[in-house]
Each structure stands twice: as C-alpha cells, then as structure tokens.
Image 1: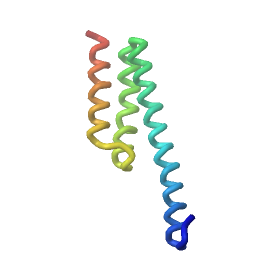
Image 2: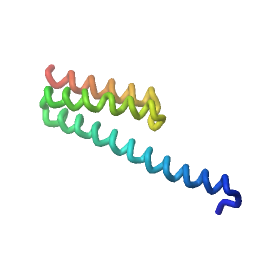
Image 3: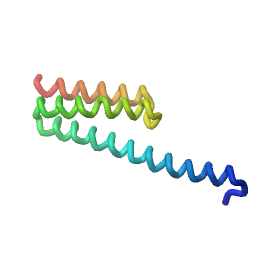
Image 4: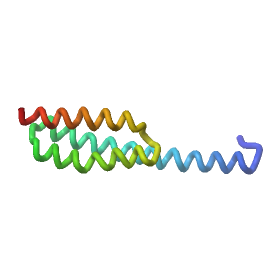
Length: 88
C-alpha cells in the first residue's frame, strides 16, 4: 500500500498503462495470427494483404514502446520470407 499521494498516483498510472500496453500487444498478435493463417492456407495474395495491414500495426507498437524495434524487424522479415516462399 502506498504511503504517499504521489506513490498512489504512480500506482494508478502504472495500472492504466499496463492495460493499454496489454491491449496493444494483443492487437498486434491478432494481426500476426491473420498473416500466419493466410500463409498456412497457401494463399499468397491473402497473405500479402494481411502482411500489409500487420506491418504498420507492428511498427506502431515499436513507436509506443510496447515492442523492441529489432524484435519487430526480425518478425517482419521472417513473415516476409515465408510469404515469398509460398509462390516458389
């Protein structure tokens, strides 16, 4: 339990930020899952469309500090390679 007014405020802020960040990460995972389902189905056009929607969402997570930049770059690269491999 917080003993100071400022400490209780920090607790409230942390709870709000945690909820927002959890929502952002969940949203990103949903977009990535759509790309992976399209890749699994073998539909290259659908996978590319889903990737184009997921890419800015993932980078938005980087800008908001939810995910690390290199992590997102690595995941985007791997998804891109998997999409390119569908046609080959």
